[in-house]
Length: 495
Image 1 (tube, rainbow, N blue to C red):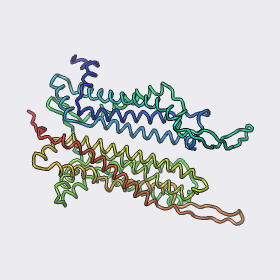
Image 2 (spheres, helix red, strand yellow):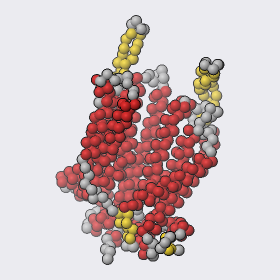
Image 3 (cartoon, rainbow, N blue to C red):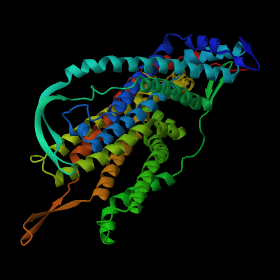
Image 4 (cartoon, rainbow, N blue to C red):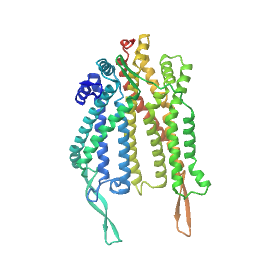
């Protein structure tokens, strides 16, 4: 079955990957479920892209107008990217049973590369099964939803009168709420399933590059780098530039300039802000941990502070996705405030309806990012099981340990999520402006009314609090791993 030249054969590799225990089934089930949802979103994006002239009509202008349709497809692709990250994170969930199984393979003569391949095949099998079930759900559910999401209403249709003349007429008939009438080619379904499986398997192999699998257990090499404070400065500089972008453009007399150079400056500032936010989280987590540990008399806060100070990059990795979602969410709320200030919802409800749809998508993104916090927090707990078992063996109650781990997950998020959302709002105000002039009256008696764009404090608070509550709920659910990860039997020594 095993030779030095070729390693484990593929048949044996698949058989070993399928030999899982009850604990491993939780990880495999999570990977399969997320993979299935990812496949549904990917095929939905394909359906939106393939909307043709004979499809529809649809009740939403987002699907009727080709220019807006591209934005819907891009939004679905962003969801696919978030779900792909979440799927790969599910494969990182460690478990004592899985580590003991890997150690057994090493004792039986398997090489570290063989065991890594087994882990990759295990994840690929779970992801492939979930992707196949997701594709089947999409194909079966599409015709069923087509009947449930069709209603009678009115829509605007273009009717060409001549080569240069088009008449817009209002027509009454059946409207589709979703693009369930669009045909998706079979090869697109196959590519989605195979592509997702290959991507997740490759990312799993990449994620295990810091894992050392030996015959006595599994060790994960932690980074000993000291986080730098330079990324925090990058975040401040990028945010200030975006916030002052509109006043600077007005001062330079470039209000009407929409050159590519200005667009490049905005994109670069956004990238600098995002990178600074993500990299600066490690330095902020270390500072919070050191500050809390030096000033508290509570055991749970002391545990959280010491763990944050000792491993700040864990917080940076865990919170990266949810901080990006908060940053984008703040930008969306700033854009919504601008659109509501310059348009009339009573006369043209299109923008209000569109932004409500975007807010719904943002809520889904927050939930997905919070699930990422659940996965990463659970993986962190299991990874540090020997340390946690040592604390329990030393007399620390498990209740105190749970509170400490919950604080470890939430303390870095308390300042960073509001900061990320505020940076997004400032960026939108810098890009779109803080006021809008509307011309009223005739040419002879023109009157200009200035509409001031308010800061969306209520939406900003709701976004910050909602994101924090979602992260807190998922981190609390991850504490279910504490009992299984605090066995004093983990405190074994190796010769």
